[in-house]
Length: 237
Ligand code: ADP
Ligand code: ADP
Image (cartoon, rainbow, N blue to C red; front, top):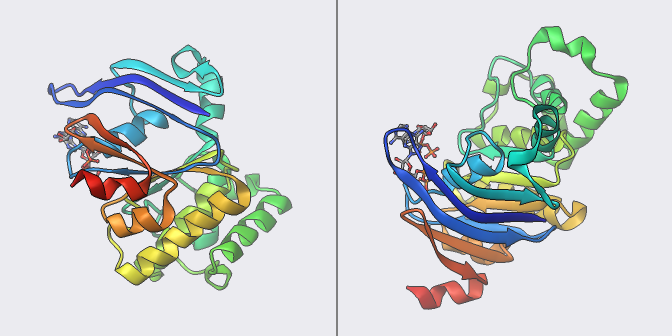
């Protein structure tokens, strides 16, 4: 359970990207976040995984205020949050398998010197995650030899190596064509339905919201302007 309470973010330049944003996310929900470019979606996701610090307000995770967490526990919290990005953020010169293994470290910068840190179980898990997203046969290819859709599958497999409680996906399909977009959304859906991982996913297209989300939050200029069922959102227009 994640509680977002009166969250505000003012960037150093003075842009107020989030304005007293408040909502709860029950465990196992598939939540879509929509809004025009610049409405605050990325800022919200980056506050949740603490890539950035909110200016005001609380994020409470399983009853614990993140602001009260000491650094070592913050690292554990971050490991419980998987992250998938619009631009995949793979290390392109590394193999698919190395990229996926790096998820076990909780950060996304694999280096060959880390490889001997992985156990046999880590390798088995990495292959299992690649199988789950249907690209086990690409394990030993370099990431930059893969198509965009395949790279996004690698990044999902990498995030799953963290055994996340929450999967944050920041416009995960914005750079993919509609067919690939559906296949990526189906993997997120599978992780949500089969493993009970909470998914918070920013999206551009309402058809994807209708098809995959349990609930939708719309942001406009940093404010929550809608919070409800996907079936109710059309009444807003
Ligand atoms: P979205 O993801 O919905 O496109 P963002 O969260 O990226 O929205 O941006 C919200 C607002 O905050 C925008 O006005 C954007 O220009 C601004 N913003 C985002 N990141 C930064 C930053 N690092 N520094 C200053 N302003 C930023
Ligand atoms: P995306 O569309 O993938 O969210 P953006 O173009 O919004 O990417 O942001 C890319 C990077 O630029 C982010 O790290 C964001 O923090 C930063 N950024 C976005 N808007 C601003 C801004 N107005 N001032 C400074 N940095 C910004």
